[in-house]
Each structure stands twice: as structure tokens, then as C-alpha cells.
Amino acid sequence: MPTSPYGSEVRLLLRSALLLFTFTVVIGILNGTDLVDFDRKTLLTHVHAGTLGWITMSAFAGSFWLFSLGDVASQTPGRSYVSTLALLTMASITAYALAFLTTFGVFRPIVGAVVLVTIVLVFAWVLGRARGRTISVPHVGLLAAVTISVAGAVLGVLLGYRLATGVAVIPATASAAHPATMVIGFLVPVGMAFIEWVVDPSSITRRASIAGWLQIGLPFLGGLFAMIGLLLSITPLITLGLPFQVIGLVIMLVRLRAPMLSALGRIGDDGPRRHGPLAFGFLIVNIALLVYLVVNYFSVAKEPPGNVLLALDHSIFIGVMTNVIFAVIMLFRRPVAPIVDHVVFFGVNLGLIGFLTGLLMDSAPIKQVATPVLGIAILVGVAGNLMALGVPASTRSSR
Image (tube, rainbow, N blue to C red; front, top):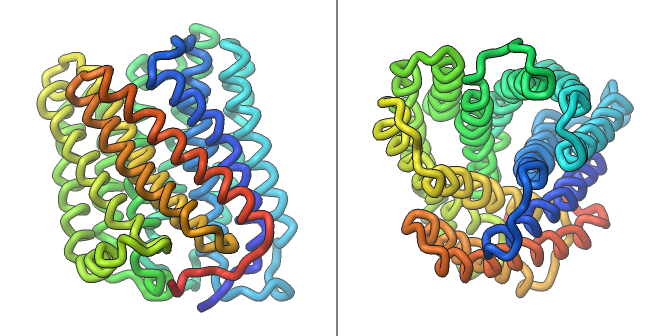
């Protein structure tokens, strides 16, 4: 199994992601149980600490690893550049989350611009490292995700500047285009990449087939169509991307049916592979909800119900991404007590099923019961993985 010279940078980013995710989870528990009614600043921090701090930082960590597989540290140029980039990622995203928590002013887009520069630098590094390398489907997924994250970051900074100053540097529709770009165009490709990595670890050394490129490329195009369609108010362009999402999902199911079934057969084990099929199941739920919302609301200019939008977000933020990020972290940490991994796996997935049920049924009692189960299971995972990542460990990808 090839390794990477950037193991310390990967673990640094994963530990930082876990720490920022703690804030998101605590706010989520208090908000989901209706114990605290948070202001807009806190809720925006909750969202950005999760999407940027937890998911984007983890995606960058995976990119540093995959796009340097097989390199030898003494022969790898730019080692200090990657170390600096990892530190810049950690510092800028943390500062951005704090900016959301403490201010409404122009400081937000200023710090956001620093995050944008960081994302562009990571994109440039990934693009440069992709040349002359065996590109697997997980590589393709992360490359697509990092690419579209540049567009999402540009929209986010311009939208923040508009909100802070009132200067219309970008249409008001960017308020919908920005999250759609990240949820559809960013999260789906990176989710697919991580799912494949954990259910079929050897896939990261195999060249991507045409089907693999289509699996990632079609949802990537669907994300671009959604971004442009929402930004320019071209509804047919939004709906045009829906078949691309569905076809990409079907291709993934066909390509990975054997390792998915194998992972399901070992669901009682404490290894990372069992997270993959559950994450894929939540990806199906997410795309089904997306199709429902676009067909029934966005395509006819109707305001979508807030509970369904929240279900759409949490199905991919938690169901897909948190599942597979925890699984990927297991590849870089030392072992923990099996009970910890069981609590995380069953608590997160059962808790999320209850939480989504409560949202879709608009049932506060179900949501209030499921939220602490989900949140406590995630916090157990955060604590266990933080301690286990403190000591370098060889990858467990062969598991």
C-alpha cells in the first residue's frame, strides 16, 4: 500500500476539523432539542464551522494524501509549502468561523477573501500534482470538489461583501446559488470519493474508468448548472442538472455493488468500511429530496418548506459526509476501544434516521428525542478520534 509524505499535515487538518466540528455539534444539540433559540450569527457560525471547518478541511486532508501517494519525503519538492498551506487552511477557516460568530460587518468578507486565496492555492497544488499520476475515482472526486469549491468561495465572498456594504457586486440570487454550489457541486463529488475510498481501499491505486469519470463528472456538471441557473434565474438550467445527479448515483451503485454488499455483510465489525453503504444510502435520500424540491418548488418559483430544506442539508452533511469522514479518519489513527466505534456508527446513523424522520414529519418530539442521540454519538467520535490521531499511525486502508 503506497503512503504519503504528508501524514503529519493530514492529521493536523483532521484534528483541527474535529475541534471545529465540536462547536457545530453542541449548537446543533441545543438548537435541535429546542432548548436554545440562537441568533443568526450563531447559526451561521454553526453552518460554516461544519461545512468549512469539518468537511472542507477533511477534503483538503484527503487531497494532500491522495495526490502525494507513493512520493518519498526526501525527494518531494515543496514540502514546506504543503506544511504552510495546511497551517493557513486551519488558521483561515477558524478565523472565518469566528468572524461569523462575532460580527456582521466587512470583516467577514475580508477573512473570507483569505479563505478564498487558501482554497485557490490548494486547488493549484492539487491540479499540479494530478499531472503524470494515476488518477483513481477518489482522485477525480476530490479534484472536482476542490475545483468547484473555488467557485463557491468566490460567490461566498462576494455575497458577504454585498450583505456587509449593500453594494450590488453580485445578484441577490447568489444567496441561493452559493449554498447550492457547495451542497450539490462540492459535497456530492467529495462524498462519492470518500465512500469509494472506504468501501474499496484498493481503488485509490487503480486508474479511473470511463464509468468512474462519468460518476463524478455528471454530478459536477449538475452542480455547475444549478449554480448558474440560480445565479441568473434560469430555471430550466437548474432542472437540467437533476438527471446528471441521478445517473451518477446509478453508475456508482453499479460500479460498487460488490464492495457495498461485502461491507454490509460486515456491519457488526468496527472497521471503516461499514460506514460506506450507510453514507451511500443517505446520498440516495439527499438526491431524492433534491429532485423533490426542484420539481415541486424551485422550478415553479415557490418557497420550499424549511423542514425539507433542513432534511436535505443534514442528509448529506451528517448522513454522507460525517459517516465517511469518521471512516477516513480511522485510516490515519491508532486503534481505539471497539465500543467507541460502535457507539459512533450506530448512534450517528440511528440518531440521524430519527432526526430526518422528525424533520420530514414536522414532529418536534421525534426531533427532540433523536437530536441528543445523534449529537452525543458524534461527540464520542470527536473525543475518541482526537485522542487516537495524536500519535502517528500507519494507514489501515487494507482493512
